[in-house]
Amino acid sequence: SLLMGAKSTTKRKLETGSKTGVLNLSDRKLSTFPPKLLRPPVSSSSSADFAKLRALDLSRNRLQVLDKEDLSVLTQLRTLNLQGNAIISAGRALAALVALQTLDLSDNRLETLPLLPTKALKSVNVSGNALVLLDFPHAQHSCGGSSGGVNNDTTIAGPPVFSKLKEWNASRNRIVGIAAAFFQQCIKLERLDVSHNQLETVVGDVSLLKKLNFLDVSS
Image (cartoon, rainbow, N blue to C red; front, side, top):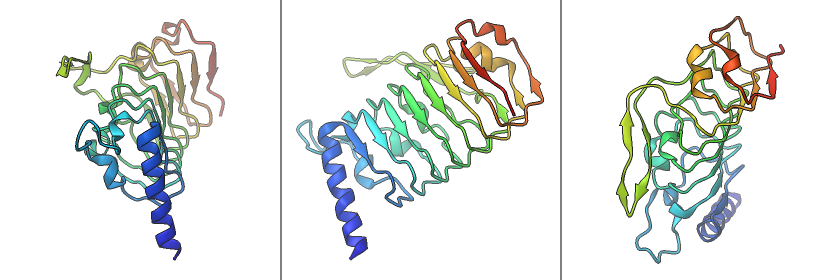
């Protein structure tokens, strides 16, 4: 049957991804994370070690909510594509991805930005959502990492600072304002696209973005 065939294809993709570190599960009609992705390996020699995934594509599925448990195993993930789902909330799930460099959350249903990882993130795409304000959650975040299996993260109260973030795409939302803190937290930005929004207020100093070479605020 078609259903059995889809399940078989997903199983093969999971097996391949655990070996190659690159997993493509786009267009699989998934409404939840595949259970196998959530389990840590049984042993260091386990063939299904998803903790070593570097790239995960879950685009064009039916995901609505991301839980921290969904992603906590994926500590080496560098690229995550969640484009074209129906995500309304991500909570703290994404903040656990300390190695993440590229994040695509475009064409979902987010009304506020989720907590994001700060250590390695370079590119974020949140275009095509329902964001009203470009601002980061003011919450506790971690910096640092782990060494020899010991967690050396330090918890800091306050807004996150993205030391490597270069590209930010927030076009096609409902954004009416950009918070002052946004520019202070993203001082390494080179590209900022907030086109096709409803911008009324930009609070703060854009000149803080000294490396900015592309800015689009067109409507």
